[in-house]
Length: 277
Image (cartoon, rainbow, N blue to C red; front, side, top):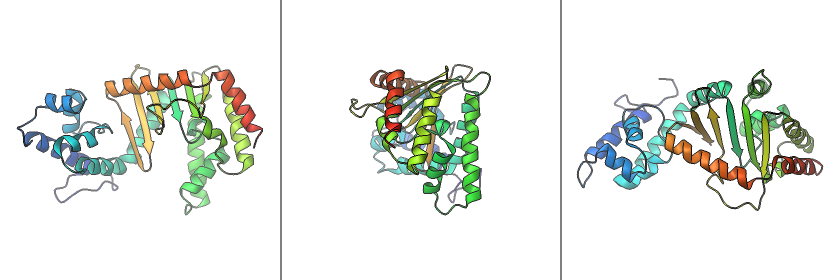
């Protein structure tokens, strides 16, 4: 247990309380005890997932807390516990995500807001990190930028992963740093399109609404052919392993791919936007 993990009077952290309270809610359900199978059916998940959550194995799938609150009428209790558990475990989750990324044979990313870290220039990353933590010292910011750029080593290795990136067209016009920073960043994206193992596509602004419209996601496939879905938000993160949820994420990503511009047309649009900065 890290020093960042908060515990209650019973000595349980938020993830442990989530597991304990879920077992209790299921067993004391007003209409009679619910089996794990019945709870899974009502929450539209698998019995295996319910069992893992109740036994504190792995992270809680992000879609379940709200559903549990609806099923047990707990007025946001499970949602609050989930948010607390995720916030306290973020550093460990981030380290695990980086470990998965380093050994991945395939990296598929979708970003609706910014150029993802694997493709950022140092100046672009610095501008983002500086705005994210204006009180941080230059040495601290420099270390964070260095760590972010070091991630890109996997793209230059002897056996780089197959990388697919889809970004919203708005990313190309959203200023991060100065105009020069944006020109260099878009030029770097164009350079990445020349890699045989990398494909970059742009989702046009007039594309149809989709499941991932406001949710960045990274899909990492290991050498053992297991795929993980990594999602992040403000001070929260999750690594989704549930097979059904990952399958849904892959399906949503595939739909994005079909809606996005071709790699050639995307490169042309990036080049056109570069000239406007």
